[in-house]
Length: 588
Image 1: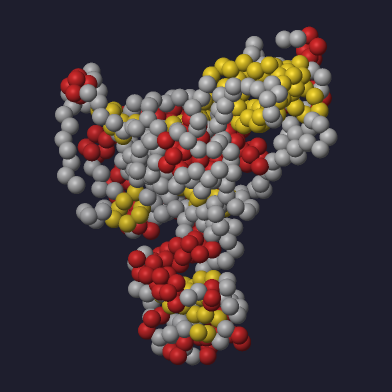
Image 2: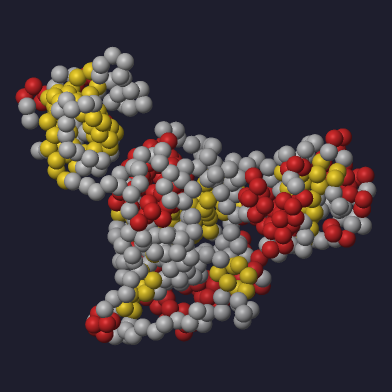
């Protein structure tokens, strides 16, 4: 390192091979001899005696001027040594942070040669995702992916700092584990030492973190890697990362406060703005107002109840326990084919049909059902929904849950903007049902997991009417995406037995499946509660990505394959023999 530029060198980035990062160079470095390293983004020859090399690293691009020609090509890895100088008048580049300066009198050392890349590495290049994933190591050089992964790292730092500040201790839980009772399909790992026996990869550290509470850890957290063998989609991968936490001697309000602090810290780091306090609504309110338990609050339009309006109606289509409506601004312009498609969607979701009303001038309605309505009903539809000329009103009449769920799905389809667009709207959804329907044997199905504490007002309902019981479970939602969920846990053996009984789980089966946890509880379990939320989803929203694949370094495709490594793949017969495994071909 030359002595004349020692004072200006960034010791954070300086190494034995470079003094500064490409994107760090500014006018204050003019006159200094520097060494920079990176990839050749572009080379331009100006005759035989002058060449321009745009050198790129993760911080940006710097223009380097070489006297004479150079052998470098796109994506060559090089070290360039030269003197920082101002760009000539008229050649400043406002699009670059380094656009006021360049490096002149350059000496270029080729560190690694490169084949031509299969696609352009600039953000403006539109590239098929399949090709990007096949060459993910090249895709990661693109500025967008660099920003996404570095933002993700900043979010992780903010989350860790928030949990540390609130007295939580980071503990790593096992990756090889026993099957868990959360309902999702798990990845199975055969044991070489115990042929015929298997571990599973944890879909969450749920049981482990509850055992930590029994162990007196008091406040645990972990940025945990979890696995679920379920179908992939935009917000789901086989492997995912979550902030996982558990605390003793707390209520659900305490846990929600812990999580809110961490999430708001992360949002401030990611966006530069700290959101306000996160509102809370009950599950029933969310369903009744928005038709979904993960409402997108960016959409101000809510469902409207028309049950009273049509209570005495002679219109057979509205002879149902509940009549719900949804206003679609400017929806009167929808074609008949589009309205038919919406009706088909409603029927596919379980509705008997979908009534629609185009609102015209003076509150008049255009609808196949208009001739069956009286004037009070016509006026009531427009008044209740606050519809104006040019709007569309959709109506579903059925049981309450079906009515709201169908319109909730249409609300999301027709009104929700892309997930990362506009204002970030967080909401806590609380008091979920304890059970979600019944199984083939008539036993209630746990809506969360069987260790979720019932709502204190609903303990007796476990025996008399379990499907009406509420739980102390809570979800955090952002812009229509469920970030995560949590609950107060059952720590009382008598209450746990009642829940198992309601689920149709015998004492013998409970001991077989959860014996190690129940045994631990018999040695003194503190009241405890916890939560986990997906970091992949949170960062995707912060970056405006429409899929979490954009914020994961090496994701799988929607079919569950890794195009870069060609996983999953077969293994040798000798390896299978050692594991005591024989494969069979499943019939399609």
